Amino acid sequence: MYRELLAREGVECLLKNDQLFSAIGEIPFVECYPELWVVDDEVYPRAQLLLDGWLRQSLSNKQGWRCPDCGELCDPQFEQCWNCLSPRD
Ligand SMILES: [Zn+2]
Figure 1: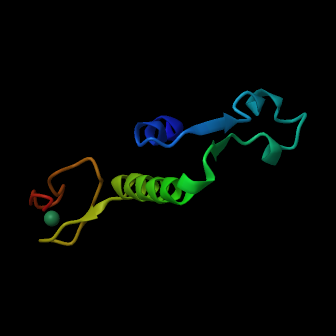
Figure 2: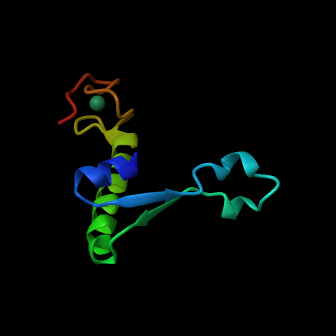
């Protein structure tokens, strides 16, 4: 997924170890993790910034939100507070 997103931003990447997952147990698991390699070292800092932003956004989308009126914690998929029905924003 991140390889595709980076490609859309013009950052060429290679995916390594994408076929090794089935070898876990025979090869140490840390050597089987998929790795995303940026082809051009000069665009690596930009790729890192893009990835950091996407990961931060992804994480914040999974976190709940606090109702501004009653203070209850609500699940991220709801646009209204489950307790007082106040809108999210
Ligand atoms: Zn509320």
